[in-house]
Image 1 (cartoon, rainbow, N blue to C red):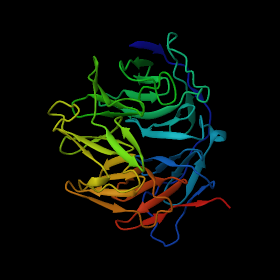
Image 2: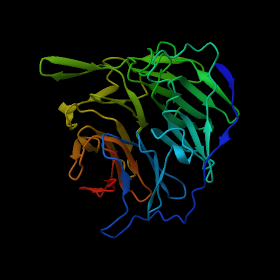
Image 3: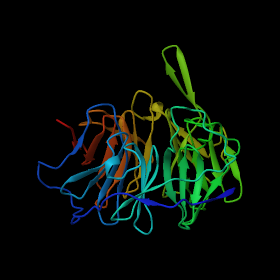
Image 4: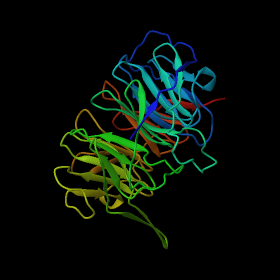
Amino acid sequence: MQVLTFLTILLLATACNGQINPDLPKEKEHPKLIKKPGNGNVQCGLQDKAGNFWFGTSGDGLYTYDGKSFRQFLEADGLSSNAINDILEDKEGKIWIGTKAGICLYDGKTFAKIQIPLPQNLPPNKNKSYQTQVVHDIMQDKSGKLWFATIDGVYIYDGKSFTLVIIDGAANGFLGTNDKAERMLEDNAGNIWFGGRTNDGVFRYDGKSVTHFKLEPITLQFDKRQVSHSWAWPQLQDKNGNIWFSNWGGAYRYDPSDSLSVGSKTCTKFTQSDGLPGYNGLVAKIIEGKKGDLWLGGDGGLSRYDGKSFTGFKDGLINPWIWTILEDKTGHLWVGTRETGLYLFDGKTFVDYSKNKQ
């Protein structure tokens, strides 16, 4: 662990004003997110304490929605990058935005760019295509500390300084030498779970040391070619205490009351053969709804898991590849898809809240 000095925050942009109305429009005509045509994604979503919605995209910046209209924020407005990977509202109501070029903080009035200072002995990133400080994931733990999974490693921020968490045993990352984790999860016991696309299995940090757990590979058959995935993104811990992971071949459910290992009876994998839709059975996002069902998004649309079986939904999706799922305060589901699609799910079909810029 290496404690690093926090650089001075540079305040950059302008205020977001307006009366907040979290209620969804009841008219047939409703506001829409205006996007550029092309292969972008709506990658993350958040409804803040005041009721505003926030949606991050892979190239069209950040959108807010107050129930009446959408507002777009770009680099010109103070964002570190127009490519947004994650959004988090902390316990003080500040909005943290993880981008392709570092952290951006919104305090309710202005944006600020934050650069994590790197250890001097950190190996340089040899991937010339990714020389900016990509932030994959942001999490706030029970104690209030913020965690950032970045291309340069995982860092804890205590409000004053950043601390690097060394994940021993993790392979060189997806985008660079130090890119050890892309997703994080804190479980009920306070352990932090890490996962990334180049790792074999997942990692658990108990505050003192990191333990590596391997998962049974999920093998996909493409004509004469087989592809196996044994990496996983930590997704959530459900009401029953089970921890869920996912990858490009399906999902895993793990009972943490027992050890996690390949072939363990406490770890169950779910694939296309179990009812997951899509070409691969790919799962990019899992949430638990207010009614207790799990909702999974992937290359085949939206799936509901009631503890026994999967039910698929994709009617109304222009592109069924779902990247993110958000349940709002009223129980409605919002999904973000490829082609920068944003949809509201009414329980049966999807209502489009996005359109191409003319």
